[in-house]
Amino acid sequence: MPRGPLLVVGGAEDKLRRRTILQRFVDLAGGPDARIAVIPTASSLGPEIVEVYDALFRSAGAGEVVAVRPESREDSHDPELVARLDSCTGVFMTGGNQLKLSSIVCGTPVGEAVRAAHQRGAVVAGTSAGASIQSSHMVAFGVGGTTPKQRMTQVAAGLGLIDSTVVDQHFDQRNRYGRLLMIVAQSPQLLGIGVDEDTAAVVEHVEVDGEDHEVLSVLGRGAVTIFDPARLTTNAYEARRSAPLLASGVVLHVLPEGSLFDLTTRSLVPPEVVVDPGEADELAAAGSDLRALARDIAAGDASPGALRRRRARSQVRPAPRDAHDLAPAAPAAAPMTGGDPA
Image (cartoon, rainbow, N blue to C red; front, top):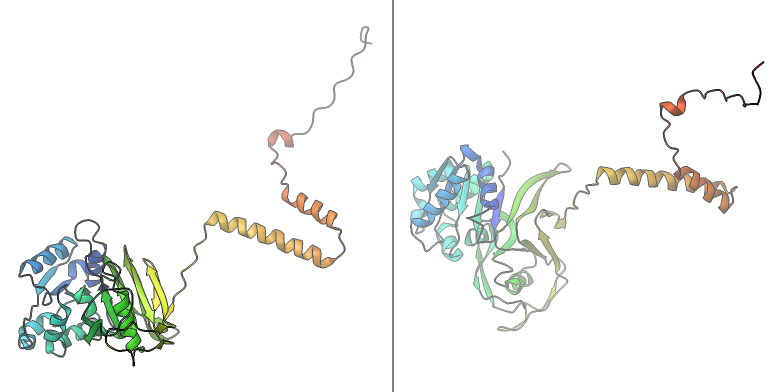
């Protein structure tokens, strides 16, 4: 069975109006047949955070919602919690403290159960902290700012559901450009992915020319920003303390809703061109006229004036003749003369 989709949500997803992202998650989990496990470990809130998502997912049509809340690494070895994940069709990790989430879950049976759920085809989603932990490398904490500076953030290990990446969230709203650039400047083998609020990067496995590719699509009202440092020039290895970093040659992609990006080839997937049928007819007619003109020019035996007259005649269409026009004409009346008839 192919690996399931991932929803990497930048935080503050709409819970009151359209709920586009949450509805997509429930649909991918199976709708009325969905069995969703909520992992609220990152959150400082109590049972109410589970109650909120339980109500949201059930209102979106989910069949069942269960809580999986380890509060220590010892809890993450609990067979009962692992069993809840083994039978789920969807996993949702809430926001909060991502370093707490990774330190409790990563490298434990609960963490491996999340990875196994993804491998067997379940959808795995997370918002804010739950988004960051899905990458191979995770922003542990750090300050905002546009300019990348040495030591402005630190990195911890994530679940590795998306290989060779680092994910940051609340990206535009909290001005986290600099810290994501700092990470990719120090580790240019990583692809930096920044996700805005109420926006999701949906990662799915797609077969392209017989090979498996990870393709990212964008859902929501913001954008997904990608930094590709494959050809980076930097001074990160020698910059000291909090000095600004040189980061030249980073390829920037800003992807609004509907965009597609191939994470395997690190390239934009060109959008499909949709042509209005009326415009298609006009383009076909114009193309036909141009081809005829090209043939006339190539013949070389017609003067420019003759070509213009021929083109004008081809654009004049005679009006359709009705039934009256097609009837035979009546004979002309005899001329009237003076005097009595013979």
